[in-house]
Amino acid sequence: MRRRGGSDRSPERREPLRIRPILAQIAAGYRNDWMLLLGGGLLVFVPIGVLTAFDPFDGYAIGDWGGGWSVVLFLLLAAQVSIPLLGAVFYSGVVAAGEERRRHGVRHSLADVARNLPYRSLIIADVLLLLVMFAGFVALIVPGLVFITWFSLIAPIIEMEGLGARAAFRRSRRLVRPHFWRVAGIVLPLAILQSVLESAGVDAGHALLGNGYLGNWLGWIVSNLLGSPLYALTVLALYFEITAREEGRAGRARPASS
Image 1 (tube, rainbow, N blue to C red):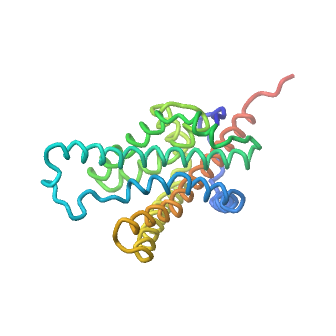
Image 2 (cartoon, rainbow, N blue to C red; image 1 turned 60 degrees about the vertical axis):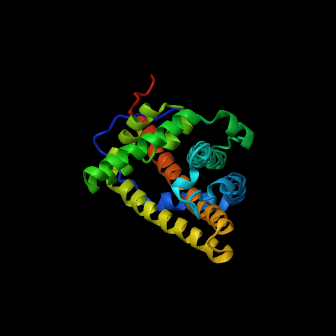
């Protein structure tokens, strides 16, 4: 799932990024790929939820995990962090594959996605982004919001262009910078809406199956089915819209052959 990146040069005049076409593309993604979004989500989040739903401290104190059980606790907590991260990376790749098929007619099977995703770069980028945002919010709220906006395109850049994490950070900032306020006007409300949807999913799971293990499991599934495709489709729509503009301007800038 690699495309050649557009030019990073900033021309003197730029047409403002229009939000309505981006929202239309998000809606089209849901309308055309809903089976993929739902099926891929169930494939990923149902089994992972079996692990994440278990709360090792529900009814147990930290001291109850002494001795050899401390190793079990460490492995469990490590798995509850790493496996959902792998699942989120794979699901974003599934959504990207669906969008590439819809937009460009390029088909990728789930097996192709699983084999070819740049897991290492995506995971490193996710971890670094969390650290950068955390540092920004610790310093002041504003830098954290700026970082969220600047680096919102990292995942599609890695998936579509095959760049490493460090290069993806630089390219995301270059692509977003000329459209900063328009991108912020989409990405920041998106983060709030995603959080609301995920909280609603957790509440729905608990309301249906109680506050124990089964409720946690169902809440995990529903919250991710609601929040994950929305985020993935939005950043992909932004990526395709911005890079199309960059490529169009680069083409117009080339001198005509005689």
